[in-house]
Image (cartoon, rainbow, N blue to C red; front, side):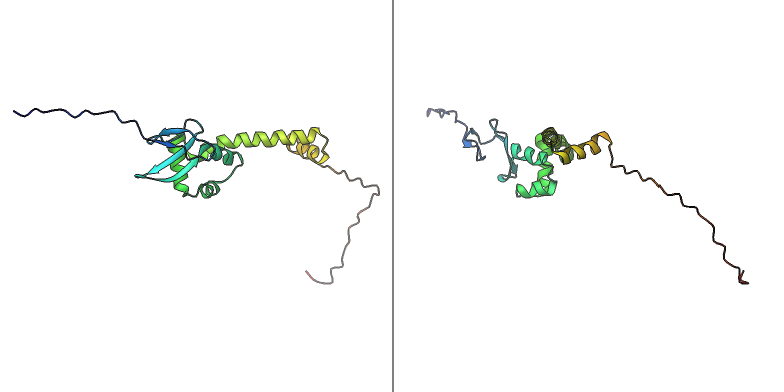
Length: 160
């Protein structure tokens, strides 16, 4: 009777790849969908890598209040791809996520406006006063000369 020997199976180490972000050299497994070091996400559509979204850059674009079309153009992918990526990675709609991140951009803008106003920029002081305090340019007109208004009566001339 021939002797049956089992093949020794060695555990293969998972294949690694370098993060595709230009700012990160993190080694991650091939199956990883986003880099734990920098947050760079690789979108897999089917078996091959189609598009890549760098989430820190994505967040900065949202803070600048870029539109969906502008963001998809930046990442060189379709609008639907961006919407699906946000839904899959962040668990919410693009509009919800953008509004959430756009708040940070508004805070930065407001901070800069306050810095300008506090440094004595008169235009910014006037603008903030109108926007936030309800101030307005009101010009009072005084009529110093009283004008008497007399009615003008035109002759009928036989017309009715």
